[in-house]
Image (cartoon, rainbow, N blue to C red; front, side, top):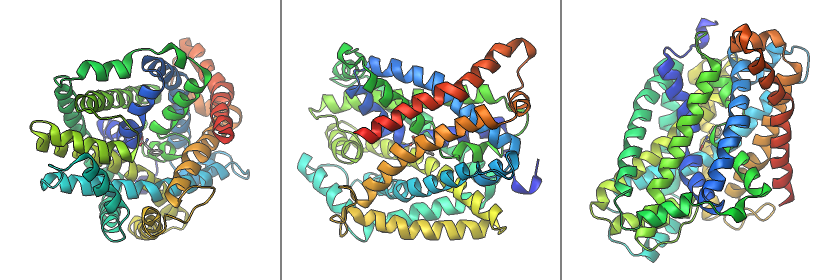
Length: 446
Ligand code: PHE
């Protein structure tokens, strides 16, 4: 293992850092709404199928590339397939990371602002319209959202500049357990609200009309986004894994924790929303307009709102860190500069583009591309197009191009588990490319 690149020190650290990447806005503001819209448990069953048959093998595929090569997104492909064009997948990953980061930092900045606002008591006692206005005025402003965006980029830059073990691993080992405790306390509280049953029904009651192909495709798309797949993020993280880590088990654990977090987030949100007569929404509308109003009507609303925004901030920050690491690792290793310099360059570029993206809710809101503002454009391009394309290509690479010996070595399966090995190959070659290809085509057609 290349010592100078650094590596994670403990298995617990590996799990926390990788779960930190997976658990993010995808779990808290995307998943709950998709379950509600996608026919409750119908969506959940499709989601389980997607995670099990597509998410876990795709994650293991990225882990195999990363841990075998111990290199960044681009160099890992160059090492495994020298003299070919496969490393284009690595460039695509870095580009996707870049684009996601440019809007993810804006939202992470909002979460930090709402955390400050709730902690200072400024988020209580407003009207429904008041909360909506508060958010629109804040996000549409020029100065404040950019200040918070810079704060988030600075925090991330400092953590990433300390490297894998002393930066990302150490902070994940503190932040993720804190996130889990907060999540569980909030979920338990939600079970004692007046409309708990209504909320749980909205979430879990199966709606047979949703039993269709579209719901399945949304579940696959959601699994891909939520598990941080398709943009070399997990290739980069696994390049710092130690050799004693079991890749299949780690992928299964990450996916199960990610799912539990998404389910608990749903249990937090819907009973609360219904108990106070609000309508569920998704995305920013839900967590920055609807929920503040819900918290302000609850007893001990101050406490619950602070906890919720701590949760949201930690979830967003740890994902933002992981995407930033993809870009930093690539820049520092490819241009042979120190990690600190690479962090400064990366964060400076993010600050400029992030600030411009942030303005797409204010002064630049009329600037649209294909009917979307800059923020929407980055979100659409990365989530609906670049992640699926990256996922398909990575899977084809592992299934068709990667030496089987490398796969065998990395999976470390006993000879009696030949069947599982073949199942992985079948998934890499056919299941993942076809399923994710269908998601890509569907999103291009709508
Ligand atoms: N998985 C993260 C979430 O759920 C988003 C993400 C996508 C992070 C791709 C890293 C890479 O919010």
